[in-house]
Length: 115
Image 1: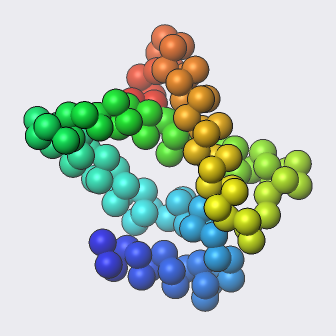
Image 2: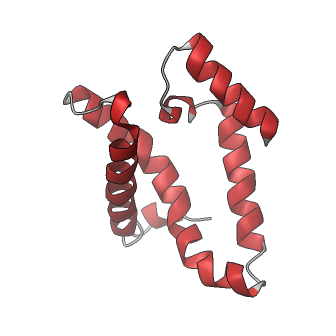
């Protein structure tokens, strides 16, 4: 975890010179770490607290898939500003969540957005 975080920090600050972590989500190490994290949490659902949170896990992979697309759409519309990262985060989370909910209702596509 520390190595992945350090790698992401170095990529953002020293290589691409952008400070928003969304730019590192296409990093293969970050993708692998997040997939391992999602799967690990999913299989811990027999614990009471994890069982109560599993409803979020179903949408989390869809959100992870949808949000880079939304970032590119916002950039193309000149609505993306990396200095307002918190606003970006909230807007992306809400829109990605609702888009994922819609995708989960479409047969065959719902298989792509669930663990």
